[in-house]
Length: 171
Ligand code: GTP
Ligand code: MG
Image (cartoon, rainbow, N blue to C red; front, side, top):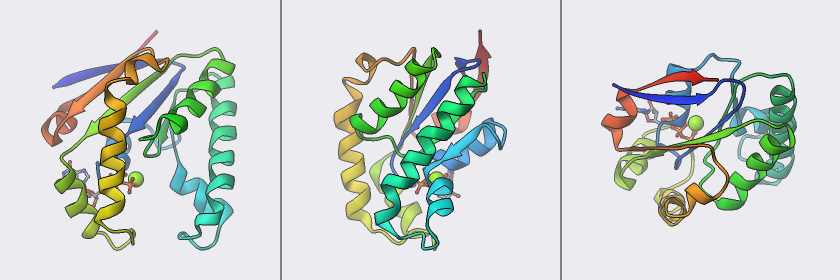
């Protein structure tokens, strides 16, 4: 097993393409109320889950929700792709504004696996091109991730490393 230490009252950003296994990982290792997701927020501000115009409002809600939880001293896990630097920067700012630490957990799976899993899902209607773009964004991000303001970057390389991971909180 590989133990990931995360800040007790802080923020954890999951980082990975669609199909990387973020929601599965979050469900296994954290409590259901500790995980906030862009999908859930989108569902709360749009009746059509493919309504792309709802994205800014969904993230507005997600940032607000994260800020409230952090202000209240609650460990919070963000389940969103976070493959773009600007997306991560907005959450790092919410953590800083609330004087808490933020870790990144990168779920780095081979692109073919993420594509294969996503094509097999009936709750995802996008194709391989979207995942290839996310994968490229992530690979480009990896080099500079450690300079973005995270306390720690936990880089889980491959499906086995993700499956073997456990979590402990650090004060
Ligand atoms: P998005 O929400 O689209 O960004 O994807 P995600 O990163 O949350 O992936 P999710 O956890 O939903 O997993 C995608 C698919 O892969 C699901 O059908 C899961 O059942 C499957 N999956 C996730 N983790 C594993 C794993 O460790 N092993 C296997 N075999 N399948 C997995
Ligand atoms: Mg998910």
